[in-house]
Image (cartoon, rainbow, N blue to C red; front, side, top):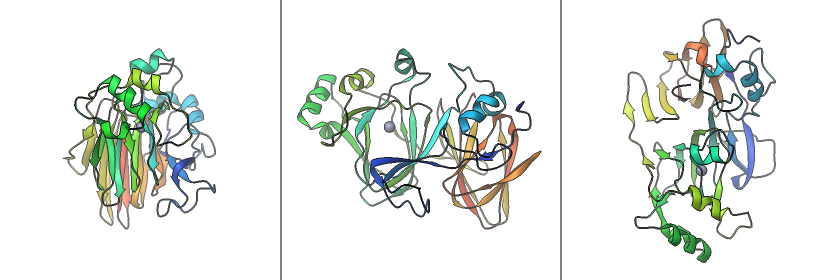
Length: 316
Ligand SMILES: [Zn+2]
């Protein structure tokens, strides 16, 4: 494949069982293919399988290897080409561990291509749902170490209430935790390094020393105000990712210029993603349609109305 004419394609989600997850993911997914509780649906993971077009049946990693430039543009790659953004839906039914991710410099010192800055778009939140976002003012590394040992780390965290529609920025180095009763769309740098600091007594491994090395006492994490643009709402625009939200009324279409690697994720309703020279792809709830950097522009059309987000990696 020379990559020319690589049109948008849809990926099947990959479900990750987690002890803090849910068995029933409706209305997002009718079935997960496992009896285990599922915590994460990976929408753009390397193992996600293409379900439309000529590449149907191939994993995203294979498409990236074979059509890297058309898909990704010409980014300054470190290591093998990789789709830059990992987009997931999170379904916590219990508290997630208190954790932290490395930044690029720390990750690269560990031989990984990039760190993990992430953001969460809150799709559903029960009343009273909270997240932990960073350390309280005045916290010190020694204080954090002592609180981990004493099982009181939660008291050193800043707990923030969330509701549907919130966008939360979580830069690498921010100590964080997610409580139950929310559904998040997470957009993150493609990186799977998590250092668990406290797990409420669950028997999973902790990585306290690594966590203390990459943790930052102050970070830029917090809620981000949406910005109304021409025909969409910009939820966040950061160094690693931009997330835009679109709402289409029935029998409407929107033209979206595409110059970077990214994807569209259906949130509600359905639509068709059209791109010149390629077969249209149906946009479905909870699934990503990858928009290659070479696409130029896509038109999203909906008969009955649809809402969706576009996530892309600026500079890709
Ligand atoms: Zn995280």
